[in-house]
Image (cartoon, rainbow, N blue to C red; front, side, top):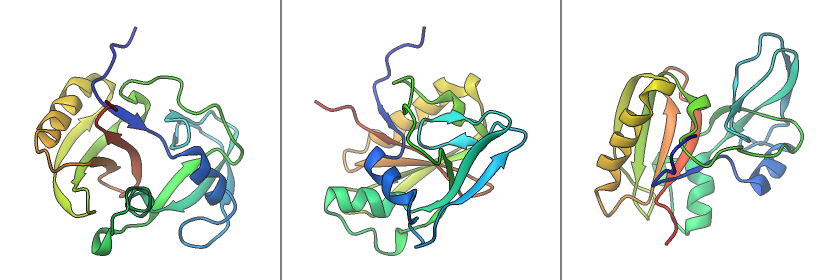
Length: 170
């Protein structure tokens, strides 16, 4: 059993998914495809696609979406990148802890202030399920700064958004 995490790991919000399934953050309709080999990271449920499953490729602007919710202005840090999602609503994440299915070669953990400025980051090489402890140590370092409001995790090679991390509520 996975231990309870001290962080709040978030997939793309279901309301946002409903919007980008129609028109993504670049103003285009989703690109539907059949994932022949499977194993693509799905940002709607923080899982991996199955071979032969239909998935959608969309542009997503995570900082813009967070900033709109938080009343911040992402300014020049606003980025739009490709993400895979289910083309129809799914059950969402099946676990509340660290999303090990989002692991991969290298990940960058980017910390943002409450007003949407980037404050710093950490790069993890060989970011695999065995590296959960290292990932949470990186988050501990980033969240040690009281000015950090949110951390976005991205793939280094493709720049794709993987998931969002917040301090737990309360």
